[in-house]
Amino acid sequence: MASSIYGRVGGLVGGYSVSCMTTPTSVSGRLGGAVLGGDLMLEIQPPPGRIAGRVGGVVIGRSVDALFTDSSGNSVRGRMGGIIDGVDIHLSGTDRITGRCGGPVIGFDADLSIEDGQMTGRLGGVVAGHSVSLTVAEDLPYVVSALVAVITYQYYLIAQRNSSSSGGGGRHSGRGS
Image (cartoon, rainbow, N blue to C red; front, top):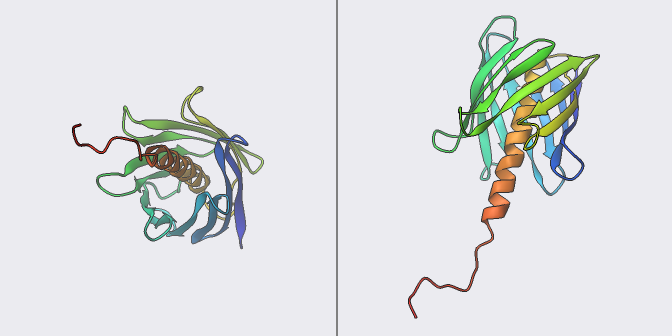
């Protein structure tokens, strides 16, 4: 049986759309739009198995590697990105999923609720966070839909950081006058 994870992480201006198809062993689709955003592909082993895949492209992208930490599939712990530029992710819960992406100082909290097939809540703080409104996958534990929301927000933050730091140019050549 196939289902979907569909909706938005963030507002109309500052955020990404989520459009993914799911099966009991995979999530695939798009985060963001046709130009800004990235593809998501996750392979999923049943709990307490592994969740592995990639967001973005082959060159500009991030790996995703996580494990269900219990046999019920209500908890996930893993990493998005590499050893140096990656972030740890931990999520747990059933009807309310909470957790953290990143470390104790640099990162964001997740506080998501599921009711009638809809996931709503917040990633990050009240001021510097994003709202979440997604349908949840019917064929996977809810924590996988929460993981997709966290991956989406982290990928959005990476894209924002990269676009603001790609400015450069300037008038200074680095040589004295």
